[in-house]
Length: 346
Image 1 (cartoon, rainbow, N blue to C red):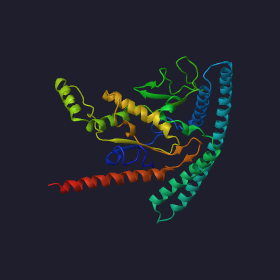
Image 2: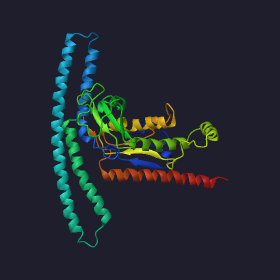
Image 3: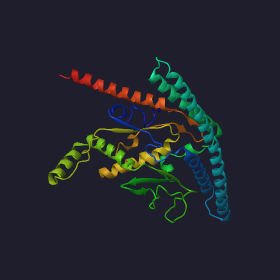
Image 4: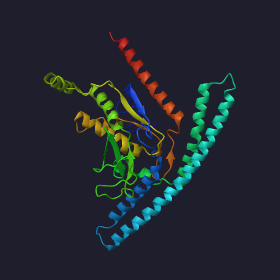
């Protein structure tokens, strides 16, 4: 799913040596809602930022013409956003129509199969998943042809953070990258000055406890592979405080984390989930950085480029199954190889 030069390639950063994995979905699992409908707005905001960057670099002096250009940019952005939203809504309607047709066809085939004593339930289940993936793949092709998401692939995760209003929840309270958090029921999210975020931010909400739970798993995994000096410091602290808990005190020792999603924008996954989880992990451990952060959480997903063309690396449920099967095989081969070496030791 990734090139040999990618930081997520199995041969890099020890990914191929990891033995226990928690593989999570993104939309509707880690997030409170499907983020797909947010993509055209994200694309429009990226396009706006690109125009502003070009404007700022084209002239060194701020004059009345630039101020007028800024007003024009707001009008251009609003028109661009509305066009993208309308276009995307039509594509969504096409998807739901095809999806409903696929469901009805599956129900007919299922009724027929129930009368067949030789029915293979596993094959029927996989056939159903494949049939339900086809509408998505077909409409994805239409999305690419429409270029409705053009410019979205231009931003990386760091740039994406600037146009996201991330809301996470901990112990019933909302926290966000903005100091003034938005609640789950807010339709009109606002910034610190009380102004609507609708024209400059896209709100993404993680499920309650998601960020902290995933960070704890990584914190425990980190603690099992840390240096002897760190372990010694922890032991000394424990000797002085019998109530203290080491970072590896929970039951999730040695787990690694990956995101496996049919989402089209890995930069969105990185900015709204991976980077916040890694930050939370550092907070738990009380460290400022980790040498493994760069590739600690691989993202296996589809990808949209700057032209709005989507590459389907994970086209559906069966592709997810195949990726997990591949991961299990890799773990088994690694474990078997280590066992063979142990048997050869004198």
